[in-house]
Image (cartoon, rainbow, N blue to C red; front, side, top):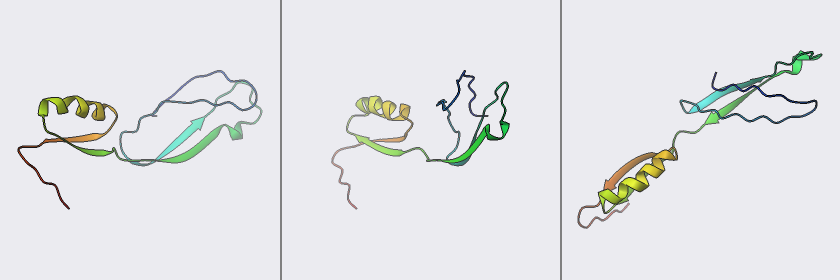
Length: 96
């Protein structure tokens, strides 16, 4: 189970959100189950869907000063990105 939440809902349509984090990229099956007292139609209490989780974004962060690069690199990592940091030494030419 990746998440669970107990809520009170009324008759009709309701929207319930959850905060779920997946430990790996790829396809995952997500299932929502409703358990209600005095439910006359229990056949419609389950919904299953596949979601595709993308791998983390990879970032190459090049900065002239290693001390200044730490702050931006940390912010990118906290946003869920995989960060590789590099500094320039002298004059660097990057070409394809």
